[in-house]
Image 1: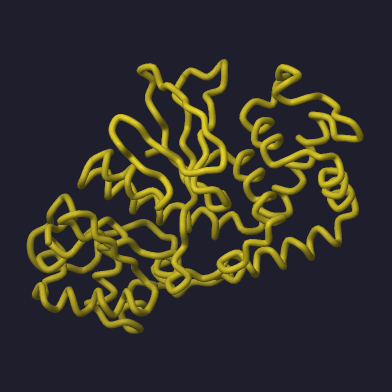
Image 2 (image 1 turned 30 degrees about the horizontal axis):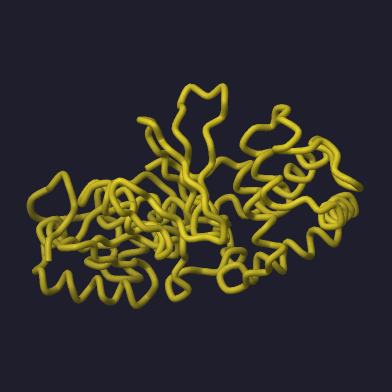
Length: 312
């Protein structure tokens, strides 16, 4: 499981997402970006040229994959009435400044939460279960990974590995990015879209940065939520699930189940079942509530287990 997709690709996916006006989780972000674009004549003009030129998101993705010169049939330098390779690179850079940079913290928090969840799945149940959990339209039928889509083509790995990387803005069920020719790693990258739960996620662009913190945020959080729930939330941020939470926090298994239900209903955690495992992940809202300080152990009574997973 790799980290987030690289910034150039995310900018290309974000531009396509914004043009499609996907709504939902992105509704506020779409509106905010539209206002920013409206105030920037250069970007507005570049976007108009991009729309009129016949260029597509695939052109931007190809450029992001390899900004160096490509063969004419892959990325023509100047289609009729179109934009040059340099024009596209400038558009990507300017759009990223408007549409991604102001939301960097929210984006990183959202992706960090999902990466943690998928790494838990891979650690607990293996790579095959991970591949089956990426998206409803991504199917693992050993030894073939299938992505549903309008076009059909095959890519042979030929002994190479496969990197798996999440994108917040990708609108397709998945896309496979070839390895860069001069890269030390020949593995292609499977990019899949994270799927924020609207019941547990603050819409992108709605999160406000906290400029001041209580001098003792752990104590303040305990006063707000109660010591047990605050401790549970902190342990879950460190990767715990039901099986060891009871020992680590010093309550019964039944109490853990009750408290995690409350945390889930409040949108502070999500829970997913993978075969016989129950995996909890702290949502961006929960992470924001915990703060961005070091992940120190929460107050706990009982044994300190090194891993956090549970079988049901």
